[in-house]
Image: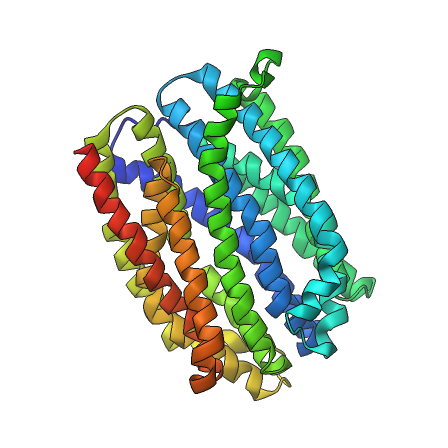
Length: 442
């Protein structure tokens, strides 16, 4: 565990972010491995099934877990920063209860309607069965994803970004082995990718819980820690629900855009499916810094060290802006070669062309995305989830506008430019709220 209320701010933030970054790489390797094996083995229709509508639904429902658990963990981090370890344990117990109830409800509400949702999202008919066979398994085991996310979020709230990394690496290795086994040996098709993900996550969760309980005494909850307290539960819900909804409304906007991309056919869907994990991999350092600054801000906010918070924010933002410029330049210059890596040599050039358009329209705006993500993390660490939520709403509105207006004039490029426009709109909201927070803490 790491107490981030002491020591050099930028060193603490970067040292905390580095394992997160490596862990996020391995997390993203889930998608990249799936994309590579499917694209090289099963063809562009199966590849399209992993992208498009499937990716949107996964982002909405699985992203809800990430937002929810980050919100719950922010409260835990504040109590940890205040050195109130009794409330830390109570916060963990409360988080487990909220996460469990949410996972069960969402699973029961989503599984029966998966095929209907895919049809309503204009999933190409030649991809529909592939997409359904993939998603139905993932959604049945959706609670696993929620618990994995919660366990990692709690450890990070306590300043431990290394333990999640170890088990992400383990999980990814298992996933790669099972992917190859299910697809190449057992010929299970796209469904095998889902089975590989579910099994690897289940093993990772089990081993992570056992290891963490042995290593960290603070995680060994007592009977009294489970005592129900309405104000305590409300404080967690007040923080976690807006953060979860932020991811959901952002994902809804992405879903609308993917519905529009689906209308351009399977080559366009496959191209964006190949480009999307590349873009995600490129901006992982930004997301890692966002998570690091959230924990740093929350712990120091609990300790009421406001000047220290401002120092860490300035240094982190400068690093983020520089990183966004560099990563955007690399992705813009090498887009065709990178997209081509994920499709077989006999694939239609249209797949690579669509993927290149997607990347080159997004890459110059990674700078804006960095400002948006880091500022969101700061506000969430302050315990102010409303502005991040409203920024997510703004992202959704802009993406819907692009889906119904820009596409009519610019076609596929109008869909791809929705991300940069959405990031810019969301950044305006959180940056304005950030400066208001600075005045109140000065």
